View 1 (cartoon, rainbow, N blue to C red):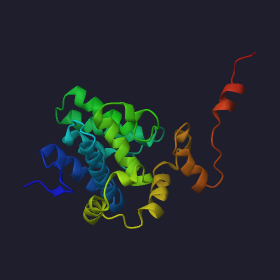
View 2 (view 1 turned 90 degrees about the horizontal axis):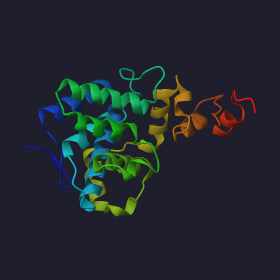
View 3 (view 1 turned 180 degrees about the horizontal axis):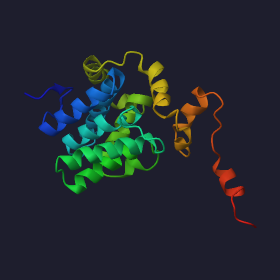
View 4 (view 1 turned 45 degrees about the vertical axis):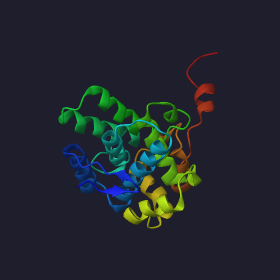
Length: 212
């Protein structure tokens, strides 16, 4: 029987189980608990808003959304969000999932840190974004009751998540901080990476190669 938390069913299809095992194999307890909370908080907000969404695709998107931070899936030169999205695409393609579903999952993962865009896309994309926002930054915190929050945390504990997650982010892209340009993750580099100087868009415009 599927596991149910806060009236949200955790998908247990073969595809979902394989995705969960992949995160278990290559992630850690911090990412495991966070990714499951993202699914639950996203699904809860979707349920509350009356949105129709594919729970299996939402769950897989949540499981893969930070997988690009792991050594196994981290590239030398791409955003970690894109690494996770590409890993999910490869995984889903190998299981014969339709291209439209793959595109939804790719977008959900690639855009989960893109403020002002993701929330206006398809429900699966928007709900990963809102699930991440709820768990990481406490966005719309009061939209879910304390009882519901406690049920989620009991199943997937935070364990000083606030104190650990920024360092986990940095570990995932400190070898390629330039990939955080134009993204909120550059804030992590600025806070925690010694000697880091963020790229300025204005400098890119004013000091480019055009002779004028």
